Image 1 (cartoon, one colour):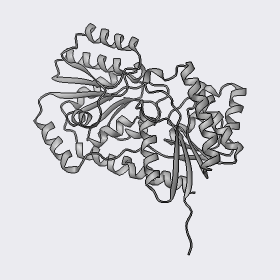
Image 2 (cartoon, rainbow, N blue to C red):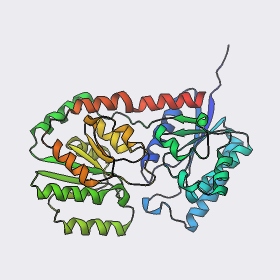
Image 3 (cartoon, helix red, strand yellow):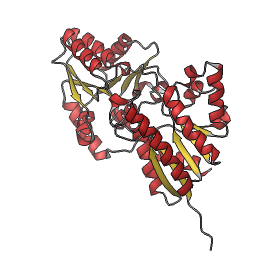
Image 4 (tube, rainbow, N blue to C red):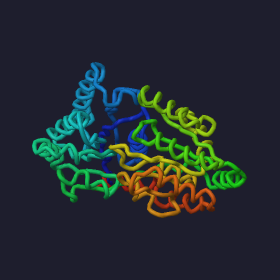
Length: 369
């Protein structure tokens, strides 16, 4: 009798808390591989902090956590002895240098390595000849997973396309067709248009541009309200946002609701008509909030950043400002206020392209090859 040996995978990645796009995808992928009888999997949580405010900051506690991670990795390689090491890696800066040591340790043990990027920035870091050569050394004899073909532009200076797998993000369909029909019926009965900004409250993600859009709509007496949902990363930007809100006299139109999860977030998405996501975030790659909105049949208005034009690829899905111009977004939203939105068609796009089972199947295929 032939017994098929399970493939052993060691999963290195950032996991919640804090919650962000990469952490969410890592959790989904880890749980999917854990449930599959063809794999045996263990994980190491690379981030030793629990708050968004700590991202990118150095302190003694984080350094001790880093040393602990190195020790944990060496033990896992010796005791668990994986066939594959899957690394969710930072693409630039000190975080890349830290993650690169994990790759080097795994290479010394002769492990097959898959590096998954959920952010971008290598293009700018590798302008320097010495740094570019270091990247090439780290990437040699590894496989790289990118979220979109568009993102190859970010790493083409340091690796060949033959090393690359393309794996778009996907999320679980948390909404039944019956629930969706009920949501559509309620939306039709509303008199007021509901706008939503859903992301971490970081300036480059675009919440101030959303306030500018709301200000224009308010001047033109459109009947709307806008909710902001997400965590502030720092106190200074919180104050800046609150000052802008008061300066534009939008307190009655715009509400900051804080972070929302589970059923609370479902309720907010259920009553939303348009998602505003004018992100200029330097490390933006895919925007999970976009496909989350598609699940609810919500069109998305965003900027030409990373793979976003590839996701919002058709007019019925929303609009992408090629000039990263909030005024252009506002004009487009204004046009759509009186148009009939085909919510079912948007949801079908999600089900056909972005449901998690498709991403899960492709990842398993990549790791099995």
